[in-house]
Image 1 (cartoon, rainbow, N blue to C red):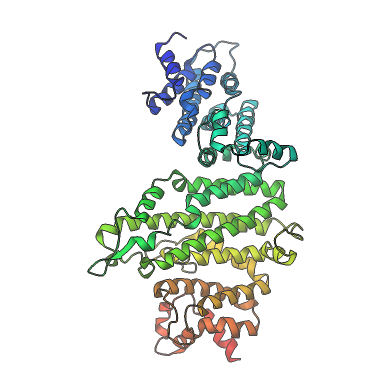
Image 2 (spheres, rainbow, N blue to C red; image 1 turned 120 degrees about the vertical axis):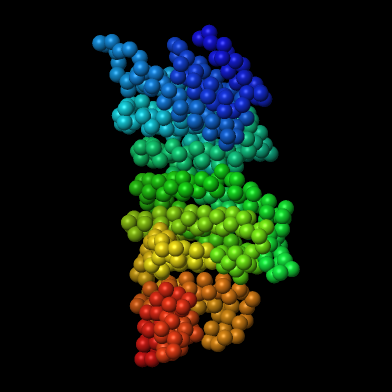
Length: 553
């Protein structure tokens, strides 16, 4: 090809630093991949081995994916506009020929770059599926296979060596950082960033891969890596750690967030984080991977589900602890008068991040609890290295996973009132609340209620939580927990207990349930307050009526 622009593109690709804007490079790659004659193989090889893209960043990987995706669009349009003769191949066949030539150019390239290019090709084919009807074709299969192989190679850098000879090879490279190994392999990036970039790209394209080819991946390690990435996006639960020290009271008693404080910087980081803004596709990919793993290897799926809930439990408990130490725990999100005007916008950003955490948590809980119901538990946890067989089987039993799920929601119960809680019919603005939250909540309770022993354990834990913070038999407070925080947490606990009362024995009701409800029983039975039942700090007065009946008998 004698196009001057084509040669300029090749010249820029050979340089690691160039004045060529990324958007221009992306558009040029798209144009020439579709137009270059007689074959796009040399250009594809030049792109994937270029110094320009070898210094990988998410922006460049995203540009590669977009360039190859748009190249499919442009090529299909060009092929449709070509004059056809009697013996001309059909559109799908001609597109397949071009796809194979592009894939040939990707051979031998760095795994992460190959993965980005193959993802773009797959997205492009999906966009034109109505025209090409290629979902079950050899062309589509080749692209999916290339994508799966490239992702597996990326994962190899993040998994522990399994065999003796792999560990021996790993020991030969001891003292060499991952970053330097990647430079030798042609990728100049930090290993954690590399993994995050790959998963962000995978979140768009992996849902399109046929389940049979997807099962060829090491699904359990991939799911663990995805969970680690989701946790890292929220600093493993410590993103609120600097909040208490970054808040101050103004002279008029309002709460303000100090500008240029550590938490102010953390807010800017999280609000611009590509990972945080991509929680919806990342959590959707978790659902897909867990479902595929449950079909292929139920034992591994149950292990991953237990690990997921343990990680979420640890993460949300840290978030709760840091929130409790901050003065914002005393203020309702809707109470604008309590927040200084200069801090309102940044506090809203913080609540947006907390809502993102809540949505992500609910999505993971829904996926886990759905499989707890539909996939029988394998006989797999009879032995364990770190815990006794009884403790291990309990923690990973259906009721144990449900109990952990409810504990996780308890940790973030201070966010729930914004969505009407877990029992309300609707929200104050007339909406329907958060149906996914209620679905996860009641599913966990249904599973837990099938085990009276674990149900009693959960109720006992709930009572002990408030024993440590307040004297529930009277009105004196023995803790500095803010009243608003206690109200939200207790409302959640009582909503749980209400559903579990039918499976508890009288002893549990007397020793664990009644102490939780005692301050409100007299309130309910008082003739002067019966008309104000809706002001009780939880959803339904049915709990108090049933408890009063049980304890009276």
